[in-house]
Image (cartoon, rainbow, N blue to C red; front, top):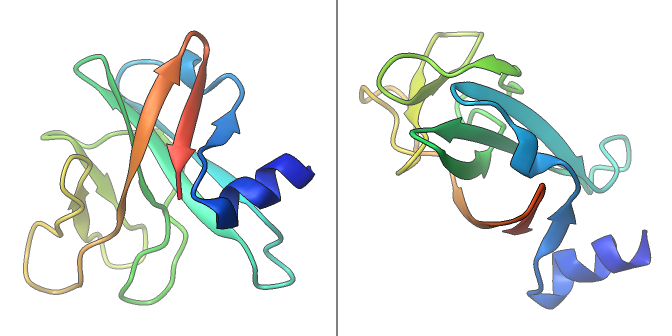
Length: 117
């Protein structure tokens, strides 16, 4: 646990066990920190074209957590509240309704992954 917390603040990557097993076209949210204490960072991992990517899982418009499940056509994650679509490669919202989401550097290491948040 201490290593994960230190990784959050020390510029070192956080290890995500099993992230490398995420199936093609799927997305999964992983939480780092404590949601109830307000110290959490929620990261959406997704895999498209064999590449594992990571982005902030909170929609910047209303603070809604985006859902696990399939990646939308064109490589987009869809916010469930207003259906805003975010590009998994760039974090850009497809329209002009919302700010972009943050993209995180991610590196696969076998069945695990490292993410810099």
